[in-house]
Image 1 (cartoon, each protein chain N blue to C red):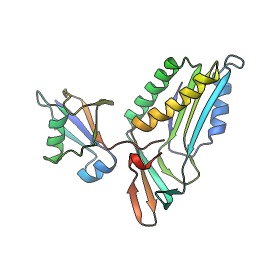
Image 2: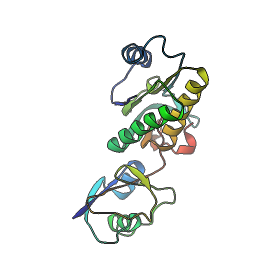
Image 3: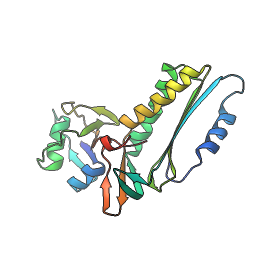
Length: 144
Length: 77
């Protein structure tokens, strides 16, 4: 149940398929829930050309590893996966993938939402957007 | 006998430093480290604090060799 930090663009569906075929036993799980978050080209009624996602590398890895482990226990998952970008990101590019595998759908849905909610509340990442008016840090009440 | 202090995102820009080292002093806590590192600046109300990658409160004690970090509310995902 890894948390992976990437500074390059990734295809979430390829990563999901690759991880599932390598680490999960077909027939053992009954539900897979996934979430993919991508960069918008607008925010707060302005166009955004690109952004930089800063992070606190050691703490981010530590926090996301713990989140995967605790979520697997809480929701009795077969497995879960988080992939998160950092660095320069363009509109349309995936920022984050969360996935949860479980015997039944309720745990998978709940775990996938829990992974995202906890990540957005606590993982030390910060978005800095570039608009026609220059750069700006995104505040957490502007980032849903 | 030292403490590593790190600032991130908008706080890094406001403070003008990403990482500094301070001598360890007995009875130090997170707020006293902030005061030393910023030369007495007020800590913004929404500042988050961490010691050795774990969230802590400003009155948490700091030990020798600790890494103390200060940053604004997070916006990942």
